[in-house]
Length: 109
Ligand SMILES: Cc1cc2nc3c(=O)[nH]c(=O)nc-3n(C[C@H](O)[C@H](O)[C@H](O)COP(=O)(O)OP(=O)(O)OC[C@H]3O[C@@H](n4cnc5c(N)ncnc54)[C@H](O)[C@@H]3O)c2cc1C
Image (cartoon, rainbow, N blue to C red; front, side, top):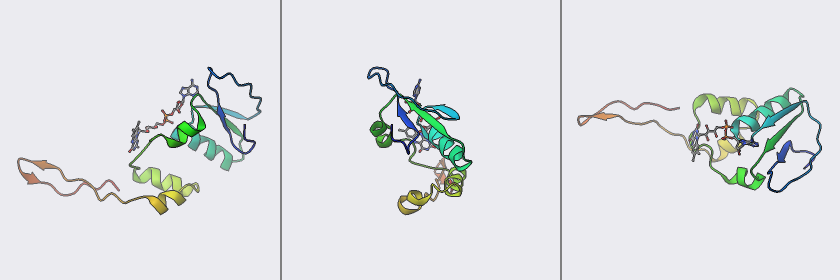
């Protein structure tokens, strides 16, 4: 395990003995587990994230193409907004059409 990372790959097929001490154990390195680990770290609480997929798999898979406003605010507030701001595209909203008549744009921002 990387000593600076709380991520532990726990694939049972490739049995790995990992010894680690942490105040909190989190199962799953999805958005919820990783964000929780980050939020705990900001409060000075150690955590270890146990994941049964490889780190490379988790980093490459798609989890969210569209982030809602509350999620963006939270990510920025906790210091995770840099890549979002650098690479994110603003979604202007959607149009709903009924019987040939288009309604006003529904903002998703
Ligand atoms: C293709 C795709 C596109 C999406 N697009 C969007 C989007 O645009 N906007 C949006 O808001 N949401 C989107 N979603 C939904 C979003 O990805 C999920 O809501 C989010 O991933 C849920 O996060 P989570 O951490 O709760 O669970 P997950 O992301 O499912 O993470 C759970 C993790 O736990 C691991 N795990 C499970 N059981 C164990 C175990 N026993 N031991 C160890 N590890 C375990 C899994 O391998 C996984 O890595 C999309 C999902 C997909 C698949």
